[in-house]
Amino acid sequence: MANAKKADDYRSLDNEALNEKISDEEIRLKKTKFSHAVNPIENPLSIKGMRRELARLKTEQRKRALGL
Image 1 (cartoon, helix red, strand yellow):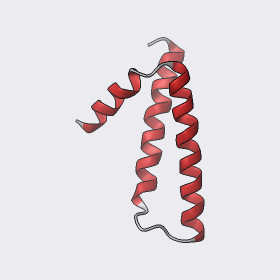
Image 2: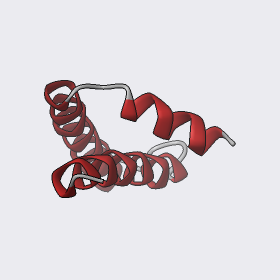
Image 3: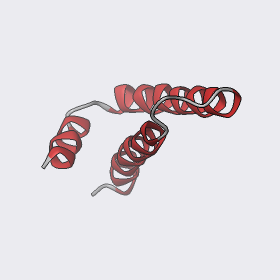
């Protein structure tokens, strides 16, 4: 259920806001992964959640590109 709510939130964004959100999430993921490599973070499963959220955003972007 929570995933469907997130998908609905992403659908309500315009293209510019969606692209900005994707770039922000990519930077956040890279910083977290680097931080984890240097000094292990407390909850490494948070990286998995970030990857999934980024995938949801990119899926919405791809749907729009295909016109679905």
